[in-house]
Image 1 (cartoon, helix red, strand yellow):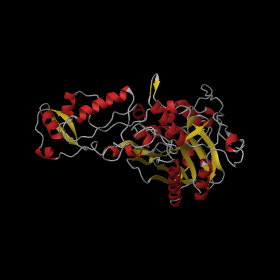
Image 2 (cartoon, rainbow, N blue to C red):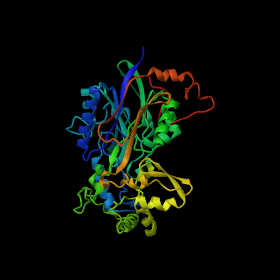
Image 3 (cartoon, helix red, strand yellow):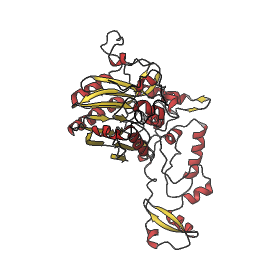
Image 4 (tube, rainbow, N blue to C red):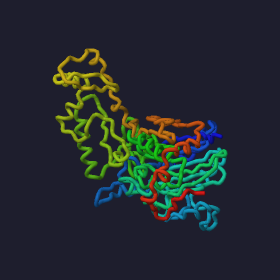
Length: 460
């Protein structure tokens, strides 16, 4: 008898207040329940927020006061689940930790709110969040069962790039898979967060626990993400769910867009985006280059800042055709009208029109069709600065032999609910006919993996 469930991912972006994001999560889950969803995944750092583009005023050897104030704002937006800094594991899950005097729960109530949403909707939730414990922040995922409440939680063991400044490292013991039964279908599920999926041994630690549902909340919107998800599905013979946020610059919190105190500057862009105060030498250099761009009378082309290291680490590339590091003479040619640029390129090439106002240069000196010159539309990059996409999403659902079932979902910021209906978890077992990377295809007599504090045997 087929073992079928409806699984889904939500491409939702964090709202300015954590309370508002929790309300949005509840609404999204209610909508998913109406559509028959059994399990729903939310993106990395959905609660608490992913601090995209923020450098927290830091450079090698220095930290600014503004950056410390930004961290304070971020620290306050994180959620407190009542766990310890080291991570209490099963004691946290089973509520065995000591309660504060006069309280009936630990933490700020977020755990209880998530359990309430799961119970009321009947949807199993997997939620990416930023967890506050002691004086540190952790990027985490929590598993919430409609019947049993929180059945597991894990913390990211290796934050990526600049994330390491604001996120502590989680314990590898939290890589423990959890089991649940939904409508008679037994699931063994586990999550790898964002670039943990580029860690082959970490992936193998999850495969070893015989997962049939592999969860990958992420902040990576690169084109390379989908092939990675397909590879993981093929390797693991599991269904793979990946959820990312689709974020515009105007969605970033005020303490990133404007002053560290979270108050918008009175001098703001025409779209209402507060002006960012820069303290670092790199930022001042960027302002100088932006002044060079604005001094050119080329039709009020908006300034698009160079991607930060955090952007580059997660595949966000500024779409603007202007290069911040260019000289004035370079910028003169870059900011010329598309018609003028095409005329100049005719001297050495024959241009073939391509989508999105791009052209393929071919050898030769053939003239360009006059109709091409009339088609002088505004490039997509030259849009209102606040509407600039800083993360395009790319959420997807992959089958156990690597086939794309749903997605990737690009540029959808509202109502991005991907649902794979009637997925048959017996397909995971069918796939083991020719590939079981931790069993028949492993040569475990020759190769062995050990993870500190983690039992790699499949859970009962």
